[in-house]
Image (cartoon, rainbow, N blue to C red):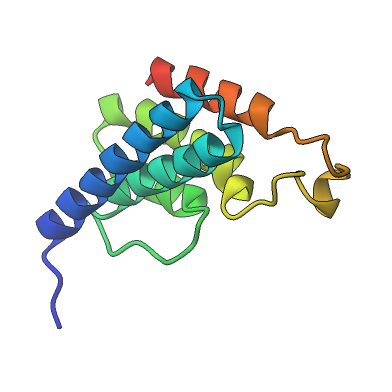
Length: 129
């Protein structure tokens, strides 16, 4: 089966937009865990849309390395934005399916979630793009 790159880009952009809408909705209602997860999926799909301009993106929830590789193939004026998006996707990747407490890898205990801070930082970065 052959995949049309334009279709893949359009599909990823639609996903990006839908997850971004969800992230904003959850953020407005202070549901930071859901906002952080939706922000992660929005950034992931934005990165994969750029990757799809040059090749089929992988299934990774952290496409930052792929995006950095593809960035070198982009016109000079678009490389900085691609690198910034790769940084955001990498920073948000741990939010994919993260437990509400932040989990043992973050050393968080029940009721001490860092997700609110992550959601606020994600919202600030999203507004910057």
